[in-house]
Length: 366
Figure 1 (cartoon, helix red, strand yellow):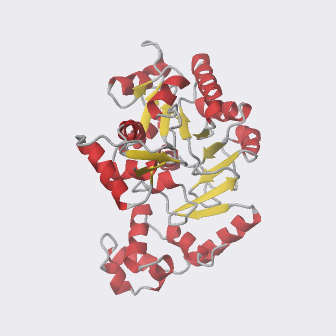
Figure 2 (cartoon, rainbow, N blue to C red):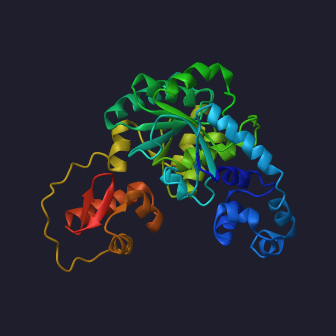
Figure 3 (tube, rainbow, N blue to C red):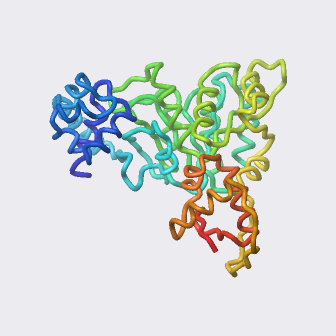
């Protein structure tokens, strides 16, 4: 356990200090422990802090609560993940409002090569469940990790289908890891610990209040390559997650439904508004995300001389000039483009002999 874990957890317990301000405190003070050793006058000068928040920072009573949480973590074999830790979900770290702390119980890789989030209505129809089960069954050969929220309807259907197809599946929760909501899904959640796990940014003793769910949804949207909405009414948590994913420049997909079906109103709307790409099968998803690209020969390719690059291609090439190799997630962050777009650009550059793909979804210049 990190010696400074107490300070990391305490940082999240400071009243009225959210994730963005907490990270700003660390950046200005030079470290998480330094935040609590800084003088009030210096804290007040940090943008967005001021006198009231500075007083909250120097209130060290939160350390008692942090130490309680450490005991809970150790007793229950939970992995704490600070936003600066190397094992913190890399995709999520590219989101401005990513959680300062995550708590994970399970055994899967949160930085797996292929991760998708599946969301939908709590009142799923037989059509929605069938589409969900078929999508996941057809994705099994691609060894995809499935993320969802353990809610009724599409969420629990996605988790069960992932388990049936021996795919890792992680539930993101709107409460601490000392409870399970809804309780009726506890058996499924327990099975997920064998191949997947539970993930939250809430400490123990946090109940699933309504306002926690939108906060939970940003993890669902940010931790994956793409978010798939299978069924949704015209408003609800699934559409909130889709909007958040769009704000993160992540790919969003939706299954269409009948125009007079209330459970498809949301999906049809975001497709019509160009907030989601229409898909009908796993093959559509695999093609758009570029997962079906054939492995290229390691033999060097001759570059096309004097090739004219688009602005987006030039941005990627310039990023690759800075380092020996760059992962596709970092390229998406640098270019501020969705995964599908960056994959297509890289494929064009690879065909032109300008870049070469490496193991682990990384690229370098030829």
